Structure formats: C-alpha cells, structure tokens
Image (tube, rainbow, N blue to C red; front, side, top):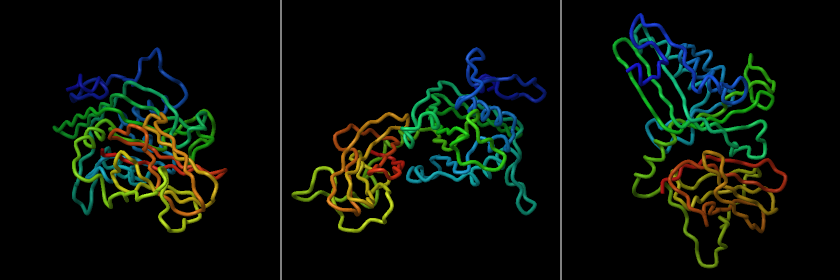
Length: 312
C-alpha cells in the first residue's frame, strides 16, 4: 500500500516519513505555476488545510463529478471546498457526534506536468496558465481504513499574483502563482460522457428551419445588454449549440477550446442587430465527448467564456 502512494505518507504507525516531491529533484521548480502545485501537494501531505486553502484565489472554483455530470460545470466555491478540506483533514464533529474522524496520514503525488494557455485568457499567457497533470495519486488513512485513488488528467488554472483576485494575506506580486480553478479527473469525466446514451440534455436544442443562416439563428428576444454565453443543453451535443447575448450589432466571434487550451474551432457570427442568438459553435469541427470552453467576443467588449460539458 505504501508503494502505491510513492512514499508520500507513512502508512505504517511509527514509520519514518519520507520526503516526496511531485517531480524529480533535478527539475524542481522554484517559481511559477508548477511550484504552486508542489506547495499544494506538500500541504496535503502535511495535513494543513490552511496551507491548502492559501493556494486558492478568492474566485476559486473546484469542479468534481459529485452526484451528477450535469453539475460538473458549476463547480464549488472557495468557501465550500475549504470546508470540505478541513473536514477531511481535521475531522468533523456536530452536536457532540463525530461524523468524521481526523486523517492519520494523507499522501498526494502528481506526475506528468504539461503547461498550456488558459482558454479563458488565451491572450494573457504571462499572467494566466493551465497545468495538466497526467497522473494524480491520492491516499488517506483514517484509523484502520485506507483509501487509495489514482485518477487521470487533473487540470489546474493558475494566475500570477499581480493579476489574481486575492484574499487577505496573499502576495500580489509576479513571483507568486495561485490556483483559481481545479478540474478534477477530467479523464474519468470523458469516459463517463462517452458511455452516456439518450438525449444530450434538457431542453433539446432548437432545430434550424428553412432559410436559417448556417451559423447563427435569431431567437427573437432582446439581449441583456451584457456580453454573455450559455449552453442550450447540459451536457451538450457535439454541435455545441450555445445562446449568445450580444449587446451591440458589430460582428461577433465564437471560439471553442479544449481543456488544455488548444483552439479546436472558430466561428464568425454575422448578426443584423443586438439581441440574443443561437450559435452552432461546434459546426465544422470534430467535437468528442469531454469538457470544452466556449469563448464569445464582440468588438472591444470584454470576452465572455463558459465551460461546456459535451456528451456526444
């Protein structure tokens, strides 16, 4: 059992704890996004919830499958995840009853780091980065119980301190990076999405009628006055039909990125006037089951980006 944790924790009572890092010592980063992930792993191994939470920005979101794939895109807030981390490490007592005992030891190792552009900020690579972790090994011992979990492809969105939304005590300088989004077990999500059957989601995407333009369909409702984008189904079909609120009548553009920040499709959106339109963002591209980011741009307005889960 200890070998499976790569010596990240002392699984046998009284055993000497071995120091472990997520990457070889010769390549150990001292600064940058990967160093932040190493601090995260060390904080878990030290069973220090405060140190774990200190790596999160104020607008941090944690995305996990939970009870439903349909809730994956929503994510948990910093406060909710902080409560979960504290309960896992320190235990939970309510009305005098022990709901969860504190952890005796925790192990966490990460391997296979690959940095990329943040799909929500593809034009700001100096301040925003993603780090994909190919293998994520986690283990926790509570009394005689030992839970081991190996999962594939966790994706972290990180932001440099001078661009981050910070909480008190965090350093707003270019030497510090923070986690603003954590997508857990993307590989497992893809596998589940690929096995889903039936409708992609509710309500069904509208069908195109005769004479409808090939890219955008006006829905006949005024927009909100704020540039915004949202999927029509959850999970979506591969066509990736999304609704766009366009406050102006300038040409707009929709881009689709995968979780690694790679641009997989781009569509121009011809519109006659401001308002709400439906766009087939995936048209012309091969969209496999998985998690994507759809980015809407119009003129000089700040782009709007939305995570979309695609079932088939």
